[in-house]
Image (cartoon, rainbow, N blue to C red; front, side):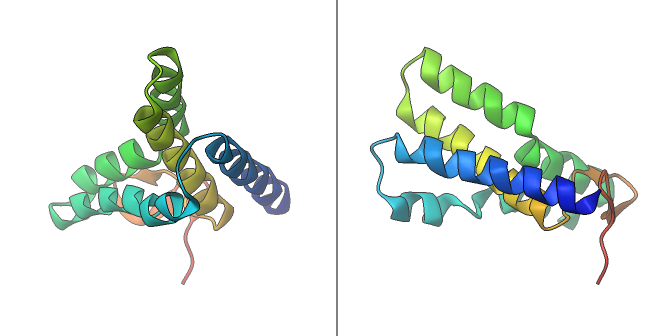
Length: 116
């Protein structure tokens, strides 16, 4: 099952690359912004509950899709960019086994426990 999930997430990451290629930005912009969603981990400096909330906000694909759709509807390319980067980053993380976090531990995710 894990292989199927990884292939599915890879396909979503490729979709993100494709959607980004339709924007007017240079590829370096995508690369520069790709790790920005990981700033959601800063909530863990407060505690695991806040960390899980902030991490999940920055890694939830439905939020990424909503931002992208708002960008399309209002013809705002920066919003489209934000949605695509969030979506692509989340797919990449899940492909590596990093899922949405439960509030008890950073290593406890909806995809299972993260190993060392």
